[in-house]
Image 1 (cartoon, rainbow, N blue to C red):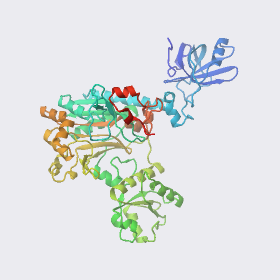
Image 2 (cartoon, one colour):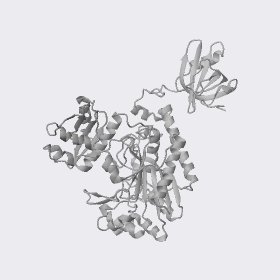
Image 3 (tube, rainbow, N blue to C red):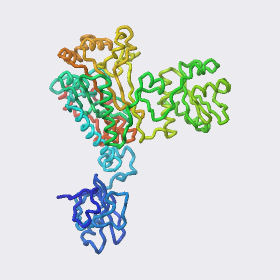
Image 4 (cartoon, helix red, strand yellow):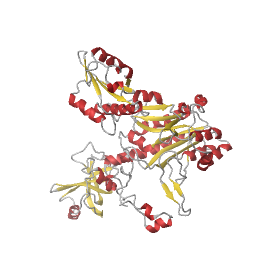
Length: 588
């Protein structure tokens, strides 16, 4: 056999045993009369020792042929380590080498395969199979594995059944852009890769599988960032004969179970809840980070009418109180101002006011506001001596988004966003529809199958923009972990929803006729939720980026630089798929 043990399991109780290890050479330390090798596999590191005059000349000769990342088999006896290492699980023992077999040599790696590597992101992505050997990446994938395992365990205990749904489906016009797959056997026709198994899981409810789940790969052809990938994984769930409260309680239980078993973190009590309208009012975001305060204060009525045009002409003026930041120098404040003026945020400028220790005020607009007026700013924001008030102004929706960015930035600057503190929040009562000026029609805020709240049904024909959805999201630390809704299960209401979204009867039938037909055969009330699995695991691991929690991720351009994908197809492949070769060529 290649090995009797792995490199992470040998302990003091194994002293005196003959063992065989097979693994990679992490480091070699040659001190002249004695050589140590750190032998590494995914379970840990075991130190190997070869003392000249104690081991055979053949072993010494074999060691001299080794280099970093060589794959070797080493046989020998476990002995007590003279200089113990309490930071290593195997730090009490070492393996006295008696026989070394080279299994495979290695080129010199392009970067050091250690916790703190000298490899940049691009080179590590190109050699991802080497990057995966490093402990920080390995630990992230181990967390992902454990969360996957515990998800299945929990859902099994509450009677969910895992069912696979198709990957080759039909393209739909709602949502993000689809990835499409040409059909060779049906020339000129295309499959789409699923953005979600939404309609299939609803059909499973019609079929009587009242508790479905799937840890499923989904695909969206959209612009990428740290928390997005063109292919991603969801914990996708659906339940029949449930109301919103049933869904929230079930999946709050799942999240509590995952954090307790995978992070040793216990949440006390129920997760807090907040309406969508309240979240926008207080935080300017539907996924607010509630680990810290700094809630918005609407200053519009307080600051207008003093001759300061920027405020007088603004639809909304918002402020946040950065506590104990009055010590910020002008240079520091200018740096924050430059930050909000970046194109990614888009503010035109920032106004500030210091609350001095003696109770007086100093602002960047003292020309327009006297001490009495500035005192009203302090009162409105609950500012105390030593605090710094930051204000932004403009169109309501834009300034709320900008202030959300500023609030999170200040939270980072002040160390208020501890990645090991977890603050979940249910956000409820989203709008059912949102108006798109470009297309001059409504779009579904979640998707076309979300049901209206029963108490808002009377508005569906007269004021559809005011109808709230029976929908819910779970946010944590400023990240949307997942969301869902109670679905429409009535054919007439679903038809009305398609009508509001601008579908003709023919278009609705062509796109979703199969679902409408299914509703005629006894569709139960049902609802569900999907968690972004990659985001969930990254949040549990205290990271902003999901990439290190995916074995082989894409970069910001949607490319896999390791295998150089996407790549052109040969002309004969394109012809076989009835695709026009010229149209697929890149412009010069």
